[in-house]
Amino acid sequence: QQQLPAGGEPVRHGGQHRLTGHPVCHHSGLPGTGKSTLARQLARQLKAVYLRVDSVEAALLNAMNQSVTVEGYAAAYAVAADNLKLGFPVVVDCVNPIAVTREAWADTAAACAAPLVNIELICSDLAEHQRRVELRHEDKLNHEGQWQPPNWAQVQDTADFYQDWQIPRTVLDTAQGTPQENFRALLSRLPDA
Image (cartoon, rainbow, N blue to C red):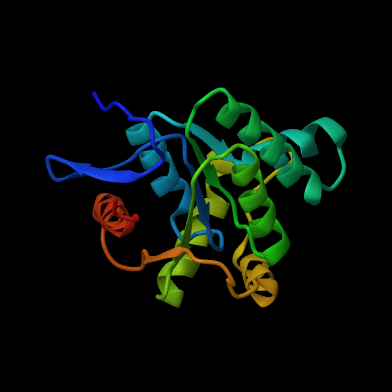
């Protein structure tokens, strides 16, 4: 079983990569790039709180019966801060398409004296990306009440306003490889001590 020593630094033990302290590992990228798959794996490895903004937005949509915009992110910042203050690492899973939301995650981490690891996932193979999005959209198990994952046209709309990153991040292209291979690649790209 892994222990997370204090200090907020990533370290390697026995060839296995670990982030230490109580970091915010923030997975961003367009829908269908593998964010949820890799964020869940990292949360399990770190024994961290897994915070998926889609789930927060689905709950708000289903409770309020109206469109959700910034409310989902605002709720997620607060839940992340609560858990960081309790000493738990947090793994966030969200599209995070604009600078203002990226800065808000950085502010949340800083307010809790938590290291922030920004991870941007991309899928450079357009046909593979579309295939993933369409499979996810068609699978009714991915629908939560009124909420449903975006279709390909909606992902393309999001791509149109997805802003370039102005702050440091780790980029991982998930177009090739299995989820396990991509997870190993992610671990190898996390910052070293």
